[in-house]
Image 1 (cartoon, rainbow, N blue to C red):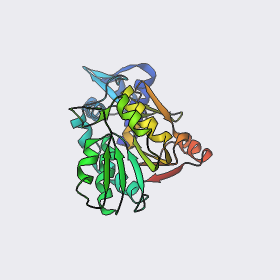
Image 2 (image 1 turned 90 degrees about the vertical axis):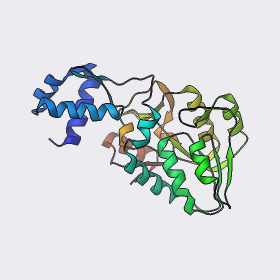
Image 3 (image 1 turned 120 degrees about the horizontal axis):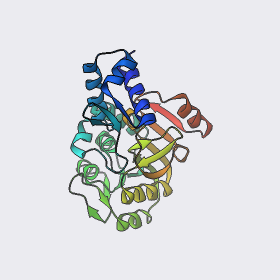
Image 4 (image 1 turned 135 degrees about the vertical axis):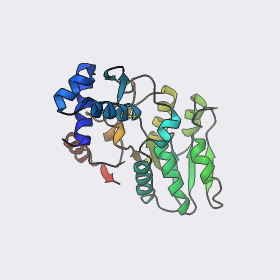
Length: 252
């Protein structure tokens, strides 16, 4: 069994049972307890399980992992996703860009473009793009979060409703097996939903760590997007859903 297969099995067992000891996992997967500890540590850093003394439990559905950790988690995959998605954006386009570390990687890749109009509630998106002399960067009103530069609240949502753009580029914290898109913060969800309502095409950016995570806030569904950008082939269930709703799948 490969490490990736073990990680999927550990995540599935934790999801089913709520808690599984390291010894039980080692016996089930026929590996050393030390190997399981390393697996659990990695999955915990990805936010897929919660690490406990002697085992693994369900990850929090109410609290995201720290922004500083998300910045480095799966960074190369996020950069690859961002670069791939940026290639789908023509010059002279208008777009919303939401909060998220993958959308931040996407924004950096946009600097090779010309004459874009970008509306965002993410200072880490606005800052690198503001140096482009032929870009117009618009930042929503609202309260700035000190820990990730996100701007949320009713003011931000109302601001978004004043515009209609060619694209909305959205990040997410979790994707369930049935295609439900989930996130942690209600205000952040509200702004992202406003972006999706007011764009002609919606692109979702999510790396493999988002599959199986279960935040409690519902943002929407995979069927609500036009393009899905990720770094690994999704499950057949997800792929069938994408085909059924004519959602373009792009794998970086």
